Image (tube, rainbow, N blue to C red):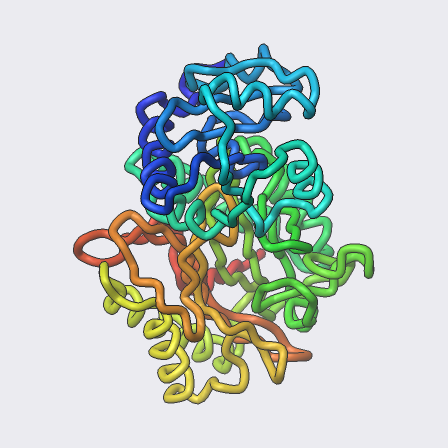
Length: 401
């Protein structure tokens, strides 16, 4: 195990402390954490395990498989084998020297079957939802996390640069995606993009061209894509890419657990002026939000500002979707999952804090024609947003001889 890839003990201790402070403030005896992204956040490992965090004692990680690997990957102090789920109450009682009366769970992602099992095993325990608290803790990134996301953003830039070599007339979306994804793997992409919203999943992201990019789909995203069939119903398909049409590269780079979300537009040869003007409009919206976003600003207000500017620029009917299928956000938090807090969305009252990281993605979708827009991952600083990706935001025109 490469020691550089372990989350430092001081980092995990700080995260655990924030959760314990929440538990103490709400008179909750402890938290039982089982979801993979949350396990990774609080322990540094995703081995098959249950983490119990008492309000006033050190946490204990109980592992089915593999205990040896969990001990190598995690810097937590207490990591013990769990021979069977039925032993959970006993281990927790011995560790806490009493039986907890109230335990927090991740209600937003915990399967009902697991919840019923916990109810059966822990007689007399009251179960409370701590998923919002965990997500709020995770929303504010440490310097360590910001550095990890910045590395992912640098690799996103390298993916975008790789388009100049691979994009050619007549190549299918899926073949081009394969070449870019091969580059991503060579650069260290972990292959898995985690999403918290139930039923949402993604493989690297979306690489689509022309009218194919504007095909609507089920995903909580402004773009969907034709895909290769109804079993996936999103992303690149078998359509051949033509000259003088917008090609969308909207890929997530996932490196050592942390993500960067990054969108750029490419074209083989010059694009018609309507596409250039539409893309420039999205850059104006990005610029406005970057200037307005400061610690303390209500995220829903940023969304309304973007909606108003899109209307002023004449793109209301195509901003963040078309017709009745548009999404009502312009950005989303990002970290170990693609859909973290904060959401720059309609009606959201959360305020920005220093250390929050989110992807800002103003886009225009023209059904039957194509998609333009941009997406960059930003960190909130005392002075506003700092963009992580450095690849040029303008449309990249590729001329083949």
